[in-house]
Image (cartoon, rainbow, N blue to C red; front, side, top):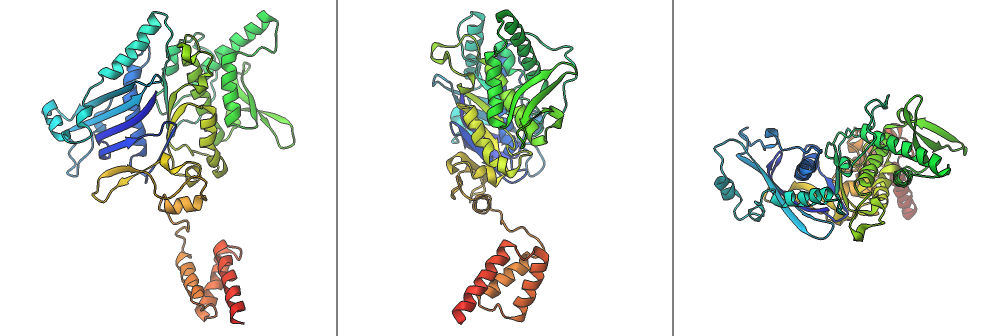
Length: 453
């Protein structure tokens, strides 16, 4: 399943917004507080209906606090959300949800507000999504082949915070539907993935003894191990140790040796990425290992369609890793639709502009999700910062005005003026003689001197 469109009316900070999504990738950028996370939450609300219909899986619904607050501090009379998606077999699904401020708001009032807008044709309720979920439930109950779409949401609190200390209460058996449990809770927890990994390691050990083959690898575990290795280069053999119970991974050291690290010994960046990749890969394997339609048989589960929502994909990552993370995820999960938010120009420099959406307002003060005019893919991050994010790469330090004034004097050929000499000396003292902009000015001065002579 892939999400094609999202429509919001009176949802949180949005009076109205229409958003379209790329088949593989959409990266959302905006100022702080402008609604990036709200968009991911709205997508999550749509697919929560799907989860709610699946046996043993909980979804969630909108809350009163999701209603937009108007300028007079009253709440909007209603909230409307609509979604359009395409299934793995190319069927289009449209569904919608509404929430009223109070009982005085009726369907006719909502219809009056949306007539003549893109929402008018989308007031269709949840029937289409319910029918889609029912097909899956029926196929499962009749032991028929079916594909189970995975939709997962990773918020800004997704890092692995603590180790699992004991196996008491660990599940040993997992159904395909268990893959969706907690999938749309943005504050993801590591425990469920750890339980699954540990249970399959036990299966792997038993199978080795039965086969008398100590090189045997459980196919499902291998898929997850390989995913971790692709996104965390230099790290391999993730596994659980029993006494004491802990999850460890081997890291290749610069001297060629290998160091075994516990989760708590990893940096926040590594914990964030490890938790995300392990959880998403585990869900995809768990959901679609078993009876699949003929067209999908023998397909690596990570090559099947899925949707991953990731808030601040650059979270805790060094700029060098920010330049890799999107490509690594897309090459590992080759048919997953990633819908991401970021504040990082390093991330944007690895994304084509048709996959970027800038949340802002147009000339008529309407909320829009626009593609950038300037190029992003392969561009220096400083250029992306300036031309796409509209941020001056020169930080607003105290010396900025002096630097601008010195640049003006040099450009005017007045580099020998006393003012220019004083500014140059002061800036070299404050910024250092090797500051790139000062070096450029020095080169300009040298060229001007040669021309004068």
